[in-house]
Amino acid sequence: MPVPNIPEVHWNDIGGLQNVKKEILDTFQLPIQHPELLQAGLHRTGHDNHGVLLYGPPGTGKTLLAKAVATECSLNFFSVKGPELVNMYVGQSEQNVRDVFSRARAAAPCIIFFDELDSLAPNRGHSGDSGGVMDRVVSQLLVELDGLSKSNDVFVIGATNRPDLLDPSLLRPGRFDRLLYVGIQEDFDSRHEILKALMRKLNTTVDSCALAANCPPHLTGADFYSLCSSAMMNALARTIEAIEANNLPMDTELWVQQEDFDKALLTLVPSVSALEVQHYQKLRDKIEKSRA
Image (cartoon, rainbow, N blue to C red; front, top):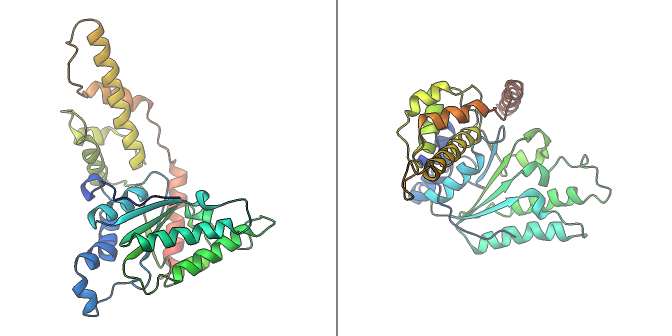
């Protein structure tokens, strides 16, 4: 069962995704920081339930966005992966769902973040389990979401790579009624912002702009993280080798150089193919059209 905490992820730790950040800011941060707007009757979209669904390819920053909201708004954060709540015993899965919402109310104000939501709330009647466990879990989840309708201090964010597998009743107004696509940042400025956010944590003088220009297309945020992590490991191996050869003192500070990034780029393979990017873009267009 998740333990409430306030994560340490800020908006400047997330490069790019400016449109998504603005949408989330309008949905969560502004009303929390300015409750007088709500008292004046200026309610935001989806205020009755605070439900937002982040969807898109894996590794694009959906979890980071949810954590940044909690950090910037000083909200307790419950992170729940769908499979964690599913239990083999009759009735236990539904009880697990009830427990999550009960603990969230006790720790309010807070955010409940459902990662891999499609595994917890698949389309009812299509889950294939003989006992109908998943159908009952979905029904319990809907009951709990509806029970938040009068709550102003418990927010729900879901994340999924497969929104097409979710039960449609989750997406009706009053539940997860705001869907935000978190896609791959293909424009140069966004890619550069992601690299700058990651490279701030490294000792390096490498030009992030030039590095962004040399990166292959269709890289996710997780791919950029992998690039920086690999470069740091290359720098570590190079520094240790120089120390063992007595070319550097033992207390030498680790610095990541251009050669370390060049070596990391040679083995970097995008985790999402161009074909998969097209699939997600078509899925986004289909969802936006159906909700227009």
